[in-house]
Length: 431
Ligand code: PMP
Image (cartoon, rainbow, N blue to C red; front, side, top):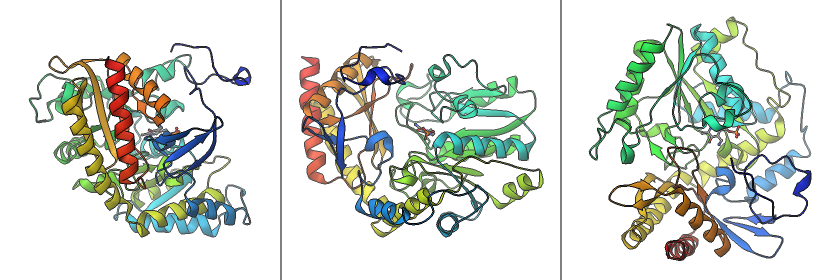
């Protein structure tokens, strides 16, 4: 990763965890905007790191935080609290039967580690299949199915890590797709895994929409076949809904678009509405089996009451304000505006996604589909200068796609403003 000098005074005391820091300091945030110390209002088309799903500093979340400050903030890991019991009960009630038992943690990485451990313990296997281009977190297990650059300086993936290509229809990995996907890449990917497997399969982990890979959606037909292939091999199916849950794709949980459900589900990012809260959810059978086998997953902040109280507020907003329906409505409006931009800008190769999780792929040439991450980066930089925060994929093989995921509370006027900034930024970047 290229290291660049930092424009912000004071960063000399930081470990530079990413290539470049945004050259602005945030001092306040509200709704769809982040306000900076130099007096600028930045319209946020990324919900922070995709976490501020109902807008920055939602008043209900702030109020829940303040109330929770009067209750125990932190407890011994084995000591439960009403907020924790209530959140687990409410999640189980909202989810279909088969997703019955819940473990509250803090980050997406941890929730995936726990799911992977439960799948390994229960199945007795250790081999896990993931999708190339995915992101499941920075801890050793989760990182094994995450962009390879994150393993730099950390050594190879966990033993038994296998990968299949995602169904990237715009750039079909098996050069087979002619506008519709017949899952050839899935069959071929599974065959390759079978040929490498030592007969110790445990799980397959997938995001319903691969976000870090540039908004690649698993279709209902694809997932139905995936479920069959997992069942045939005794693989537990884990869905990582860090980004896709809580209304984002137009459903409370993205897997509701399918006729099948996972054996294990992980939630994070959106669950805390901006605070660190995550959940691993399993079937009763898997949980009982793991318990019998001595499952243990104790972290310092497992079942902490404060984030759980915030999670209850987030869940309440999701249901009370019908956020999934709102994501569908605003997503349709935003997608139409992006398609209209595509008609005017040759460098927009593809628009895809559902609800308020949309992808815009920048290309050097619309006919050859040659990617252009450099042009994408110039557009992103210009957007920021003009007051719009955009997130661009930088993963090798998938780079140059904007992940457009504004808060679900965004208004039409804010969408119009964001589109006009994007329009200007593209026109100036290609000139
Ligand atoms: N899963 C997905 C789908 C993610 O996008 C991320 C974070 N980008 C993670 C897991 C990891 O979450 P965290 O950074 O909270 O550990």
